[in-house]
Structures are given as structure tokens and as C-alpha cells.
Length: 389
Ligand SMILES: Cc1cc2nc3c(=O)[nH]c(=O)nc-3n(C[C@H](O)[C@H](O)[C@H](O)COP(=O)(O)OP(=O)(O)OC[C@H]3O[C@@H](n4cnc5c(N)ncnc54)[C@H](O)[C@@H]3O)c2cc1C
Image 1 (tube, protein in one colour):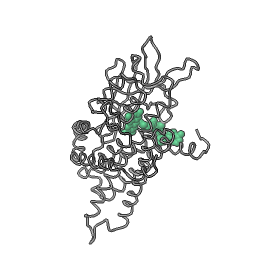
Image 2 (tube, rainbow, N blue to C red):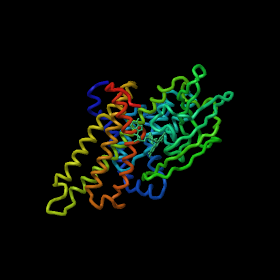
Image 3 (cartoon, helix red, strand yellow):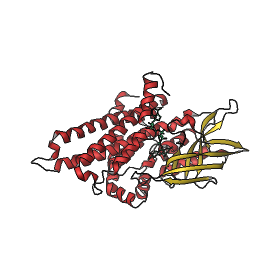
Image 4 (cartoon, rainbow, N blue to C red):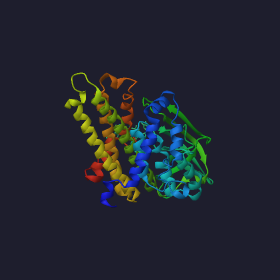
């Protein structure tokens, strides 16, 4: 990788940013807020972004994608978020599921899924979190066992986003290694209507069109073609999807942080309760300046992680993606907090719409891997400190 390429954006990336930002502004926060209020989905924006090639910008051109990488997809999500209308399922459908299928799927799986994921006519959810495993994915118990040529998949998942609108969920299960008897991770495509598959909405205090669900898989019968990738490849395949997920969550957080900061700066420039605008007071201006610095630093690490991933350096991308997700999640939480406070009472009104970002920003702190688990990772893997658990 060229070191300069992590620090400056090539013209085609800048052009993509400008074009996506224009699309985002055309829909804007008012559209997003009305979709949330009505319990609807951002279908119009999703469809238009699909037609313009933005949803599949990272997927292979031979399957209808843009032939780019996670870098381009992160730009799309960041810019839509900065315009106030993020598409959370970009983190899941093209970034995790599309990437894993493009890298490890069979020709048939690629033909079945990639053109639709790229066009936005098909959507996939991703299910790894389990009620009794949480941050400790070594404890996953969703298990697949062979039954003739088929698989039978049984288990439970929680907090899975977008299952109601997804055509299928890519479920992380485990198969038993016949040699050692130990369980190893495997990925299965489970169609929304598969017998034995059911889902129930989890009420959440997050204002977003995308809802979270508990999944129950009760001996779901799957054909052999539902297994994505090699039964024995295990963690390598899983992290091919999880690193893009972290980069994309960072991009989601950056967009939200930028959106909140812009609202606060606009307000601080014009709101007067003394002779000068409130932004002239350093107690108001400095937290906003600090947030801007945090966001810019997190952006550098986010696009460094994306570059490493796109360059095929899975190990380097893993560390960078963790650090980017940490930095962007924290930057978003701080930016939203300062933005809400800058607006005084208006920060808590429905009209100004910032208070709902308080919980939304916290999602980037806990998911898909929590702040503490990233600190654990950096302590052990990067700094070589002993493990506490
Ligand atoms: C809005 C939303 C959308 C989501 N969407 C999806 C999705 O689409 N698919 C999916 O699979 N999952 C999804 N998740 C789940 C998310 O990835 C998990 O919530 C997250 O991984 C944390 O797991 P947990 O909630 O079980 O927390 P727990 O693992 O129970 O952790 C609780 C707290 O303990 C801390 N903790 C745990 N272990 C340690 C340790 N060893 N050291 C220090 N601290 C520790 C954690 O940091 C955390 O603060 C979503 C979650 C949310 C909130």
C-alpha cells in the first residue's frame, strides 16, 4: 500500500463523496425522521442508492457491483450519515454478507445473491450475537448437524438487525469437527421463510428504521448449498466479514458525528443570548473543536483500515479496524453529547431532532464489538499484556 494513499483521497473517491452527499442532502434528515416516526423503512433512498450503484460499490463488477472495496462502501455510508440519513443495513448486507459470499461463496451462491445485493433488490441480515455468548463468541451454541445431504441448524440469536426486511440471514453457527469433536464456526444462508426459523422484534430505545430481532432456529433444514465457504476454514472466513463490519460501523459513527457537529456549529454561530453568538464563548466552541479533531483522527484510522482490508492484509486490517471502530464510536458519542448541550433546551426537542442521536451513537460504542473488548484486543494483541479472562 502506498503510504500517501491513506492520507489523501484520490479524485475518484472525492467524486464519489460529492455525489453521495448530494443524494443524501436530497433526502435529508426530514425524510429520515418521518420514516422513523411512521415505523417505515428508507425504501426510496435504498432503491435509488441501488440504482446509482452505491449499495454494491464494493462487490465484483462481474456480478453487477462496482468492483471497488470497503473503502468506497465506507465513503457511501459516511456521506449518507453526514447528510442525516444513514443506511444501517449497508454494514450488514453488502459489507459483511456480500463480502463473504464474494470471497468464499460457490458460483451458484454468487449468482443467486450478489447481483441483487448490489442492486439493492435483495437484502441480507447477519446473525452472530447469542443471548448466552454476547461478547464471547467462543461460546456460540447455534449448531449445525448433518442429516443426509442436508444440514439441521438449531440455536438462538439476539439483536439481529433488519431481519424483517431481509430476504435471508447469514447465520454464524458451528459444526462438530468429526476428528476432534470440537465445534468450529460456519456460515449458513437461512431464508426468511425457512421452516423452523422464526423471529420476534426486540423493543429498543434507538430511533432508527432498522429494527432488532431475536431469532429462533429450531432444526431448520438447509440444503448443502446453504453453507457458505469451507466447513474447515472457520475463523478466516468469519473475519473476512467481521473486519468490514467494524470499518463500516466506524463509517456509520463518523457520519453521525459529522451530522451532529454540523447542527451544533450552525446553532452556535447564530444563537445569541448576550451580545455575541454563543459560539464565541470558548466553553461552547472548544468541545465542538475537540469533537472535530476526534472525528478527523478517527477518519484517518477508518480509511487506513479500509485500505489495508482492500489490499488483502487481513491481519493488519483486523487491528486497524478495531482501533477505527473504537475511535469513531467514541468520537460520535462525544460529538452528539456536545451537540445536544450546545442547543440548550432545543437539544432535547423533537423539532431539532438531536436527542434521538444519544442512543443511536451509543450503538457504535457497544456493537458489533464493545469498546472494552477492543481495549482487551489492543492490550493483548498489540501491547502483549497478559489476558484477564
Ligand atoms: C442496535 C443494535 C444492533 C445490533 N445488530 C446486530 C446484528 O445485526 N447482528 C448481530 O449479530 N448482533 C447485533 N447486535 C449485537 C451487538 O453486536 C452486541 O450487543 C455486542 O456484541 C455486545 O454483546 P452483548 O450485548 O451480549 O454484551 P455483553 O457481552 O453481555 O457485554 C456487556 C458489557 O460487559 C462488557 N464486557 C464483557 N466482557 C468483558 C471483558 N472480558 N472485559 C471487559 N468488559 C467486558 C462489555 O464491554 C459490555 O459493556 C446489535 C446490537 C445493537 C444494540
